[in-house]
Length: 378
Image 1 (cartoon, rainbow, N blue to C red):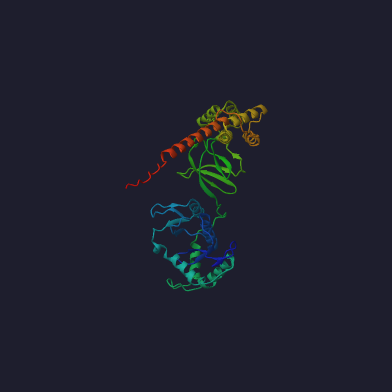
Image 2 (image 1 turned 90 degrees about the horizontal axis):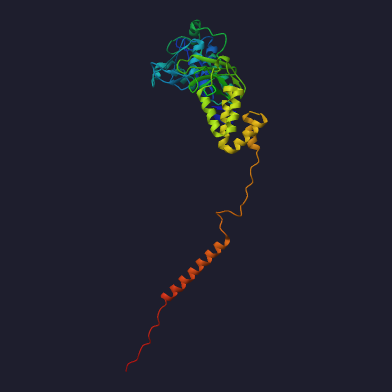
């Protein structure tokens, strides 16, 4: 149990354990949360602590490492797969519900839970990790293992030369996802746009990005399609060879749609396309989208003003419509749907007369005749 710095309450941590198969030397790390990136970072930190990388890692089928569990052809998490490839490690997921396949690490987890951490509370994650590392060096590594009957540290000294050497550069962690190539031939990553090769419009590509680069990959083969330098929000990055030699059919259809919306709307979209090419597709879509919010008549008026001033920009049209004064709401005194007040007066009087007649008729019909006086017969 470790105190969470955000809530100030004690909470349980996650325990990561990596155990070497020969010497049973283990690396134990504590974290609050788990994700695909944290899972990969823990492996890299474990390799750095051991001073080398293993050749084969046997792991459970958790989501951070294995997307689709299959003992013969598992689908690995892309980030975790690339990390292992960077260090030259081969992953071998276990069968589903087969904990005996990785009994060595399962025993290491139980050993840490029952021996150094049982019933203890720590004020910070760093304090807990320091305590666990000291226990690892002073007690776990110096013990005589129950199965091998030898000291763990001595066996690790024999096993360490067999580890793979660490690469010079650490692994470059990235984020990943899938994007659809837009009509302008670009994909969007954190509000910036990056060009794809010709022929990929409307198709799905895999995207990897970090603080420096954005990579577009073929989702089926994993082949690198394009690599771009990261751009600021709203910027574009397209290689010169990716510009199309002729106008794509989708853009021609978009220009025809703008022409049908209004002559000045079509003229402004044509001007945007001539000035910016495929980069102006999103701006033309923005001009057409304004028609749903403000109406085509208002957008036509704004496009007319933009053409007269020579400002062929979507931003000008949007600001013109946002600052355009709205027509005041007036009450009309004369309208075909509004009747004269005398009509309502005559109608009310007619209804009142009908009610009076009905009431008088009801009183006549329901009047009780007088009872005859009794006669006296002698």
